Image (cartoon, rainbow, N blue to C red; front, side):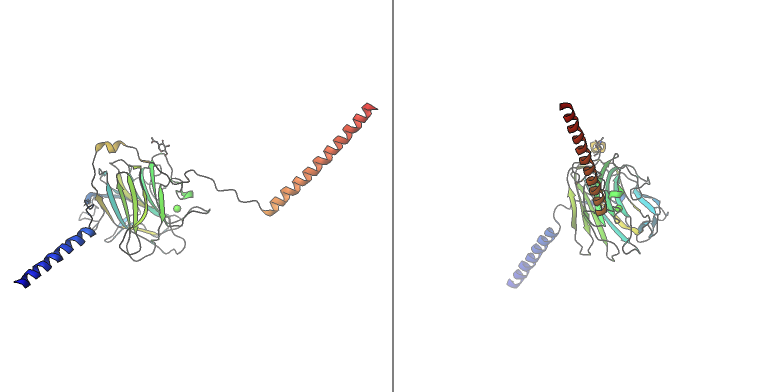
Length: 326
Ligand SMILES: *[C@@H]1O[C@H](CO)[C@@H](O)[C@H](O)[C@H]1NC(C)=O
Ligand SMILES: [Ca+2]
């Protein structure tokens, strides 16, 4: 009898420990629900050879395992767009992607995960429309900037636009980005993932790139206002340089929060931009020593001529003065 008691006590203990560790691993915040209509998951193609909830443009192809935005070939462009506008104020999107190609040092250009008003419009921002309205999470693999950068590539950054800003490729978007981080994800065998979370006007991006199965913070910015009713999408482009840009899945999670109609009326706005915001031209190349020498030489010759001239004028003036007095 005592033995039975001990066993039941032991079992109760195990149960409690199990519950406690379970709770610790799954904090209560996980009131999140996967939403199929904003997700892109396997199998991509249904029996009718259509892709439920998604449209596509350009070089996109759907295979059994991934969606290829561009192949590893020059001048390719492709995009996929969700058909259903998102009415959730708070959400999280996890993108499982792969960027790989033949190029060892030279590759590009990158891809963007969109939450935008206009869908299916091709353009110069990684295969999609410039002067967009909404949010772009830009995964830029190629540095277009000739001058020194304050960061390495590949680089992940966020841009919020109300339709008036252009994405400046020459500066890799640095003067319009809210925040960003360097990220290494090219040509690896394991899965690489990006998590975009938008909750109560706080935007955060995390990455899982090192096959450690843990999220690492890329950046968090508050004061980001995005309306409801926009569309999720992804686009990629190649130019002179190329890469395979593949999407393995996009998983949308609805977070708790009001789903209000008024949120659809607001204009995308970000309270904080990263410095520097303005497009500052590169400094002119420094003067060469020869140039400096020539300028100094001419300056000295000029000074000598001026002083001789001045002296001669002074002499004449003195002579005139003498003439007048004598
Ligand atoms: C759009 O954004 C620009 C740049 O941030 C800002 O100057 C302008 O006032 C904004 N327009 C509206 C209508 O919010
Ligand atoms: Ca770039």
